[in-house]
Image (cartoon, rainbow, N blue to C red; front, side, top):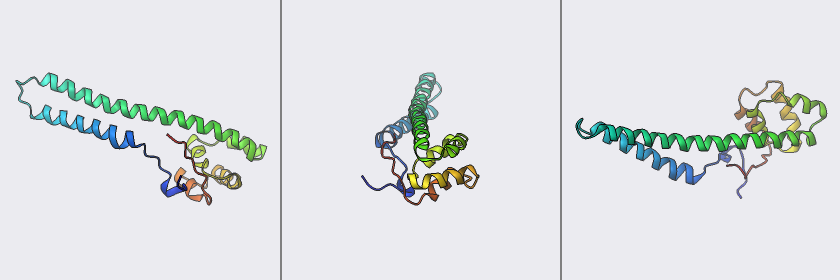
Length: 147
């Protein structure tokens, strides 16, 4: 696998991002165009139903993706808390309980030797955004199992 870093760590799931969602969006747009171009006497109710259904399919696709990401975030949070117990001092582990989920997720890319410093800096409010945490990592620890 290619070495992961800040610039290439975003995960694209080709089946979802390049096939399913574009087809669902095209389907919705097709139904929307037909709905607005249809003559009033040509059964607009049925077209409205199919347009609404095609929009619901987009929402279903997005909901399924978001649910998978939320489950992944919970697993990452658990993995990182276990890692903190192994790598960080007991005092820092207690303080790290105050990290937000987004911060924990960003810190997962930090190798063990950088983790304590980055957790400390994060807890001190040095990073306003999770993007800044990721950019502060010197030796990126790749996560190739993401959904």
